[in-house]
Image (cartoon, rainbow, N blue to C red; front, side, top):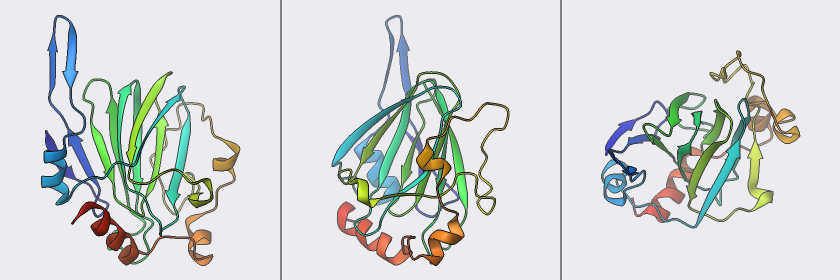
Length: 200
């Protein structure tokens, strides 16, 4: 498995090796030893999630109130999507920056989202499935969102497809508003939580 550092501090892309044969293929999108080497810690899984989206669905930018904080490991076992990590951690050396990984059922690329960052994706095909492993259980009151169309973020959302967006995401606040309201994660807090959870 290959690991690559992304623009956002602490975010990683993983590309596993696929083993095709006459029956189909075998692939391991998450490998604990490869993760531990690249991230210098473990990934304590508390919950797994699964979403299915039609072409044009845009989800995000979602993040978890920190504390408690949450890290994610995401890959696409079916279809294809642009998966986007956004650094919204106040005090981070890469605050406001983002990076994107094309995920599909050919490469099975995965992305690690450290505690405190934002996550968005755009489904490029019908029946696109995204699989998540997360380090804490889902608590609705802790889940917040920033507008994926915020010009300050300038995210690479394709304009050649019709966007399908939830009312919650359509009404999401701008990054500047979230910062003014004190709703953004602090970089130092995020690192502290991640180190405690993953033994870094």
